Image 1 (cartoon, rainbow, N blue to C red):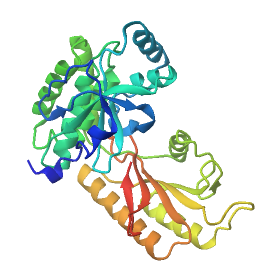
Image 2 (image 1 turned 180 degrees about the vertical axis):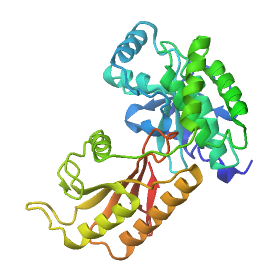
Image 3 (image 1 turned 60 degrees about the horizontal axis):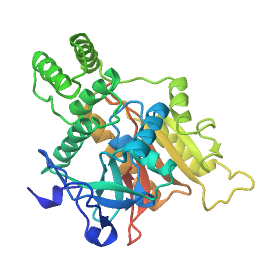
Amino acid sequence: MNDNMNLIILGNGFNDRFEVNQSYAKRKNIKGTTFSECYDVPIADITLNHLHNQVRTVTKDANHLEDTKASILSRGLIDPIVVSIDKNGVVTLESGHHRLDAYSELEIEKIPAYVVTYEGSTKEEVDLSRVRFLQKDNDHPPSKKMSMKDAEKYLFTLKDLAVFVGMSDSEIKKIAASTVKEYYSHFTEAKIKSVVNNFMKGIAPPSYRTYTSKDRSELAKKFRYTSKPSKYDYNHNCFYVNASSGNCKKQIATIDKFEEIPAGVDSESICIDVFCNTGSKDLSSCTSNRSEFLAQMVTANTNYSRFQVRKIFFIPDLVAQIDCEIYEWALDESGTGSFVKC
């Protein structure tokens, strides 16, 4: 395996940062995934990435959180959480969102955690190792049973990772059914059939989404954007754009050239946040068009913009896509800017 493509690694100095917790045995490695020994990791050092590392469609459940807290108080933590750590030493939660929240609410400063390494020679292979592990790792006590919507989400994730490329519809249907049986053993045959049928409908043409103004507004409200597009949004200290990629570029240019700074707002801190879809009709063109749009925004931010584009939310172009793909503007040590995927 090419070590440079092993994107989630155990960072240098991890042994020096956190203490080993010998109460838990070393977790058994599984195909595509290896684990460190268990460490006590300060909760304050753990970052979250719900969109990337959460396999459920409903990411937070108050009742399940209370069950988890009760279990921890009566039995202790049965299964440590799982984190990753990158080359810069950033610790990210991979599995155990409710367990981490429970420890936080119980005001326990450190939580037992394994460090995971996902294997693969390409980014897609690493991502596939991740999603397969996350599916399996949701079966822990106290565990909330995965739903049919969760199963559909997983199948669409596999599709986006090119698992079904080159297969006929009958082959896809067969693999999808066996996958649901493997990861969702509590489903009845009727539920498995329903999940697979919904998935097959979702991948059938037309596979692209269309958006009304109301659709866009409702999606932005989930991220607390409340102003009208192209207007200043006080919640985020930015001008907010929400349109297809071509119209986004026009609106950004208009804002940058003509929009006046709101009274009482620091002109140095104002930026532009963008919700954008490319109008793509397949995964390949979606990826290509998003890359092109990002490159255009990098050029604008670097060379001539009065207001920097700070954050870009690519809203799903395809029926198979569920979550926004989010990028933030960042500068490296040399001052060179780029958009980094959240």
